[in-house]
Length: 322
Image: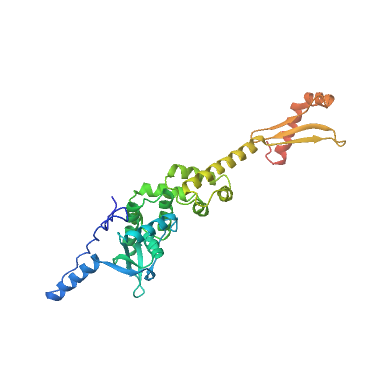
């Protein structure tokens, strides 16, 4: 089970926010000074502050492939009408009077469209705890798609986060993390960004697309297939368009290899002598009797001996000696 390092907020911005987690208790100082310090820490950790949005840095690892989309506009309109119901979470920055976002990137983006301050819980968390909080909150509020989780896992691993932190951030087992990583390693990042999050498209479908990427130039195929679609086409439909185009291209390549090529061998006077047909399985030499009846009869009488002689010549040229 993943560690739940904070009280999870409800899944909808229209709901009331859950109280923020209580801070870890520190040793009390003797007398009223220690009690006052503990009280101030508890108030600070559990209070919701109004912070100017330009004082918050949106850094850290990507957990979404698309942030500025139509859903941000919808969320901004909801906040404009009803106010911000669920706070974001930030942590103090190394720079004075600035903060780094932990979770709530969509809400922050929406409020920047609306204008004004953002309600935020301020917590002092290290990188590992911040990452776990970010992953857990996103899993509850808007479940990331398979490929978004895969890309997030890839970035966490490349950034040096330990396996147990990655598992806790997404609530996955070690095998679950491996299943996501295996697929995303076979996909060009450019292809994933062209398609988008594709909610509802699971591991098997992305795995099939990854297999296609090993056979054909899928990025070029995707660009061509997506160019004909409207800009607001849902990413799940974009995935299907790319998959169908890639499958058709792969089938065409197989058919072409199966058909192979056929060459007409001609004499010096231009008269056809024979045809040579080559495909992935065989090489066939065909002599049409009606065009060269005497030559056809001559070859028929000498075919076996001629082929053996050619085979011996091939062995001599490759130096096998046998």
